[in-house]
Picture (cartoon, rainbow, N blue to C red):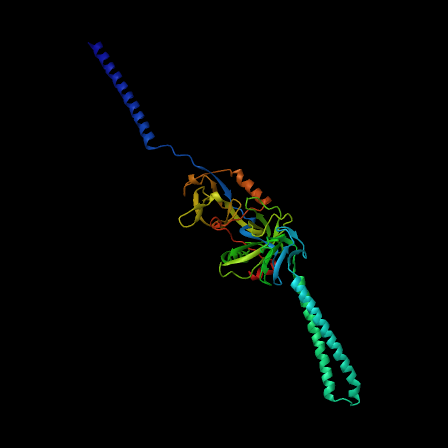
Length: 427
């Protein structure tokens, strides 16, 4: 009986220990489950690419819509009235100054010229007669053989005859000119347009337009900018945020209607001092060589002005600039590695970058890629800046990028200066 009792007690202790171990394992399992549900693993810190703001000199390039015009454009008009007898040129051909373009029937003018010559001959004969009469009376008047009145009349008749000769000479000159005007000549060298009047038509002196001639090498390109753009340009100059090119004359490149670039460069040579009261714009002009006559009067082109520089400008990639509710902003990384939004003011485009006029300072770290993952006040991991930005800076150093204002997509012209150095004070 004692042995049986001991075995029973041992079995009871073994079962108790097993139950305790089972309960402990269950508690550990439940505890691990509770920890897994209540404390999830923290998300990884987002990785972003940044650029460090560094001021640098950037080229300023402005773009406008312009129209080509001949350096000299002349309207050829009839200088005498008559019947247009024939054309002496081929429409659209090049002519030289003095070449005959049209012939007006000259017969009537030949007759007028002959009559004027006859009148001159009669006036000269009358003058010779009065001169002889005055010469005969002179010695008689000296000895008082004729009266003072007779001698004075002879002298007056001689003077009147001399005046008649001059009038007749003027009439001959006019008749000769009118006869020469029946041969309508090219006043300048250039390219002719179509003839406006057909052969056999009556033309009126000083009124009837016959054709036009344009000098096409070089050509003028006319463009305009607004008064507001002019004021902004002057403000940037006064604040030393813009420097003019050498001599104050901007270089000009043209883009044609098919998107190709015109191979020859020109210069801005004129800026009007007046504002057009109808359009509110200021007119400017560039002169561009045109030896191949690729540019024609009336042709529309895009005008790119270069040569100016923005010293110590701050520029960041366009993709780094976000549109806020009332202003543009960028995401920066502060010294603690946290994301910090920063409102900025932008000016023009420089290539693929925004020019920043306020909101950033040298040394600021601006997020370029990964902006959508960055949350204000959250930490971020800075990755190496993409090679694209470095290539972009290298391209900017080697060429002058196109500058566009943020409003350029809504207008054909963007703010730009166009003034020679001697006119800077007028702007």
